[in-house]
Structures are given as C-alpha cells and as structure tokens.
Length: 137
Image (cartoon, rainbow, N blue to C red; front, side, top):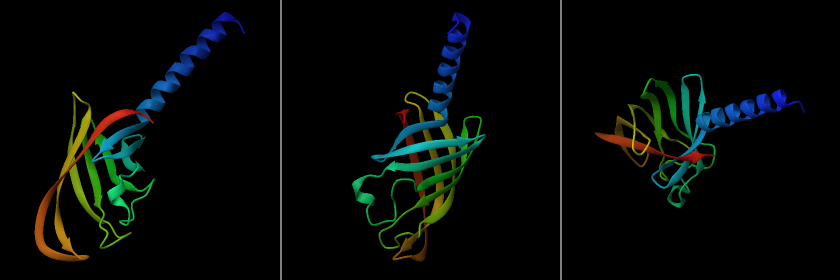
C-alpha cells in the first residue's frame, strides 16, 4: 500500500474510532450498565446489563430508560420507571438536566406521580437520574 494511502487509512480509522466512542458509550446508572446511543440530537439510554434487582420488572438488555434530545450541554426527554407490581408497563414522565464534568455525568430530574400496585395515588415525587460515563462499549 502506498505511504500516503496508509496514512489516510490510519487517519480514517482513528476518526471512526473516536466517532464510535462518542455515539456508542457505556454509562453507570444505579449499578446498571447503560448504553448511550445518538442520532443527530436524539439521545437514548438503553439497559446494556441491568442490575440484578430489576429482574421481574420488565427490564432486560435493550430496554430504554431515557429517550430525548441533547441541546448543547442539556438533556431533555422522557424517562421511565419500572416496577415488579406492573411488569412490562413502565410509567413515563418528563425529565431534563445538565451534562456535568469531573466525573463526566448526565443528571436529569423530573416529577412523577407515585403509583401503588399500578394505581395512581395522587402523591408526587421528584426523581433524579444520574448517568456516569464509564467507557466506549
């Protein structure tokens, strides 16, 4: 292979690796490994390796926890909460929040109604979801 072509291929490979790391990365959320995917400004956190305590709630690899957009250093969109009382019927609610540094993490908050055995109670709570960067997946 000519020297200039080899150099070009090396630069292209490095660019693809960097792009992949940004677009497809793993994050910790409460002991679960999450995969962050993107398409333009759209962002989705999917369960890659759910923690043991989520068994029986409908959470398995590939299920999304957050789906929304990134605008600058701000995330906003829909989060879901899962319950063993209502397996495969997650409650969806609006969340938003910043990208933070040292360590790199995303912290979104939102208010949602409290449910008891799949029924709304009329009480509300604020949820905080924190995703801490681990590495490229």
